[in-house]
Image (cartoon, rainbow, N blue to C red):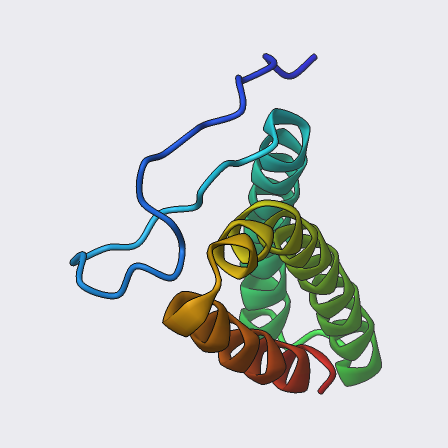
Amino acid sequence: MAKKLPVRQSACGCATHDAPARHAVAVDADIKARNVTRLRRIEGQVRGLQKMVEDDRYCADILMQVSSVQEALRAVSRELMRNHLKHCAASAIRKGDAEAEAMYDELVELMHKHAR
């Protein structure tokens, strides 16, 4: 069973652009644990795909595995989006002014890219 990590609280918000590396306002421990587990599984799937290609496996079988990896990545993306909206975006929007406007722009861009 995955170790429960505490929700990480940070003084800097996601919309702080002057920092060299931005960090989440908070990260739900269960979302983080699920994402780490998924990403490890995806890593194994990608290594399997590489072996399938090296072994000249049947194209349709490889394509099915590619589809599986893509769906797993979409699941990670959904969880990240959920956390971003719940913590980072909510915090920036509550602050208002330029930070809220920047977050609205960021969210529009994220939704556009996420919907592809």
